Length: 483
Ligand code: NAD
Image (cartoon, rainbow, N blue to C red):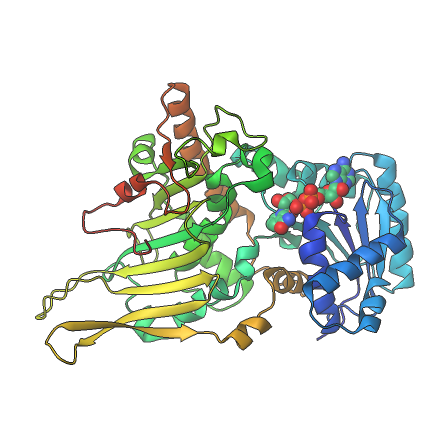
């Protein structure tokens, strides 16, 4: 791997994301030689830490995520880290930061390359981007910025944020990160779809009855009640992860594997996305809140959650496209907290085909994303002792050893930022379409709330969400495959 010279500035260097994900991912890239001699990382946050204390934190983060490490490597790696106490709203602090970045650039021969990582609360993203510009923190080489999710709260705030960021950075240098796009099975969708005629030729409106995407979480909101209550499942999970997955499932084949061709294929699809009317939202969407095991309100009693909250901890819905290989095929999705288990999976449900055996079961292609990673296809044969039909799954599966080698999503995506590959990041035009869809649903719900009788299904924990989620199917022969 090529050694990339860079000074990286992490806003939110004392935070959870930096500790659990970014430091371990950077260490792995260091071990592989992608960043090696000519890099320095400045961690910033308000706390008065020293360089030495940040280095201890970085070492701890490596030890917590790696079974075996060479202590000398950890030490050498941590020696590239510097801490700058910094309040993102204080202009003078940017001047100090700029001086330190310049010093480190010289010391490490970083060639004026800068990478800014916004690893803090989204309300600060715009402020930071504006100051990077106003206080000229950019270097003379490449200047890239990684923006964490959520990118805005609705279309208007996303547009505002985008304006602030594009004042300092070109679209090509903005990496809107969604770690789902770094997941192994998500990265398997394209090769699976486009390299085998068996799959490619049935992935059409003629053959696919519906597509189902489920992102199920076992836990409730835990300590995140304050944030979650202002967001909800639709904004927290659908606007980004679910739409990204659906886009990969429904987009036309790209001309080639370049980032621009892949984004072009996605954009062609998203332009044809059907935005639901308020009547369709009422019919095709279900929102819910989890109860406790004793059947009483549980979400509304979580710390920092409004006892009158109408925020959904579960959502099921439908989306369709006018173009692409599965044009007009309903794509159902659901996500929520307090499911019976944590599971992220996709089911491609094939249409029923008249057959002389009278075989009526649906034939599916399933992609399990987490916690296990596999793809399986139903294959039918005959039972040995009768003339009945036997159904077996043909499975593509990873061994435990293989899975242990799979890099974390953040490692993959940081690698992509260093090598300037924006394939697995969200382009503004894609994000805009996602927000247009989400805003329409949120607006319809808001109007329902204002009328004073919002339809919010209550559901028991350790199950599959509210039973009303089965009411959104277009035909009585459809049902959730994963139950
Ligand atoms: P966090 O609360 O743990 O960390 C926030 C950081 O910001 C801390 O370092 C804090 O000191 C710093 N900070 C707060 N106010 C500041 C100010 N005025 N000036 C300077 N620094 C200030 O948050 P987190 O969990 O690390 O999340 C950061 C971002 O990453 C969020 O956008 C979140 O949505 C996203 N994200 C986090 C995770 C995760 O696993 N933690 C996963 C996906 C996305």
